[in-house]
Structure formats: structure tokens, C-alpha cells
Amino acid sequence: MIDRPPLAAIALTTDSSILTSIGNDFSFDDIFSKQVIALGKEGDLALGISTSGNSPNVIKAVEAAKALGMQTAVLTGKDGGRLIGLADLTINVPSQVTPAIQEAHLWLEHLLCQIVDEALYGRGVS
Image 1: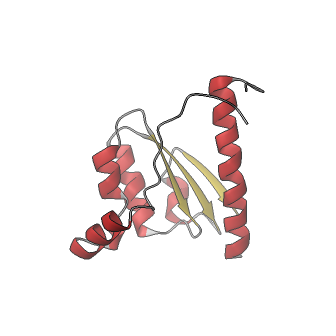
Image 2: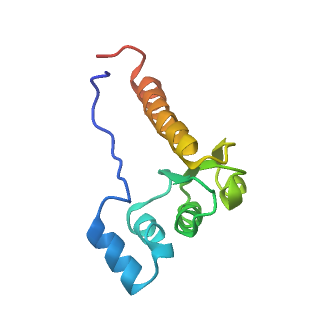
């Protein structure tokens, strides 16, 4: 554990009121892009996660993030789908097995958090 100041981050998947209002009033393809437009700014990082690489709501969010000048990274699986060429950084898990892709994504998410902590605050800071 690194004892450090908190970092600003938000998961766009957790507010059921936003997800259902955007999904019902507009389209479920817009559930993440509308949040990115509302909350994101140049210099922020948007991380998209799609097992297939073809999730329309993730693709639209990455496109919105890029339009705002945000950095973009995606975790994909299978052949990477449409996202593989869209983001600034793509980490693809080249498997056809959804649970295996999702397990690898979870491991990568934890690794990315550790890398960020160590890059910003140093190894072994407590």
C-alpha cells in the first residue's frame, strides 16, 4: 500500500440514475460519451474497457474523449475490434474466451493503478 494523496477518478458505470436516464432518453450507446463530455477535460485520461473492442458505448466515449483533447487508453480482447486503432494506447488480450479476457483486464487494471502510484509517488512510499 502506498499512503498518498487521493487522485481524482470516476467510474462511469456506477450511477444507475445517469445510466438509465441517458439510456432511456437518448440511447444506451451514449451512456458513457455524455458523461465524458460533462466531466472530462483536456489532459485527463479516459480508460475504456470492452471485451470485444466493438462496444458502441465505449467507442463513442473514446471518440468524445479524443475530441476534448483527453488521452485515451483501452483494454480489449479478441482481435481488438474497432477500438484497437482508435485509442492512444490499446492493451489487447488476444483470446476468444470472455471470462479469460475479463480476468486479464482485472489484473491489468490493478497493475495500471500500481504503475500510476509508483510513477507519481515513488516505489515503496507508505
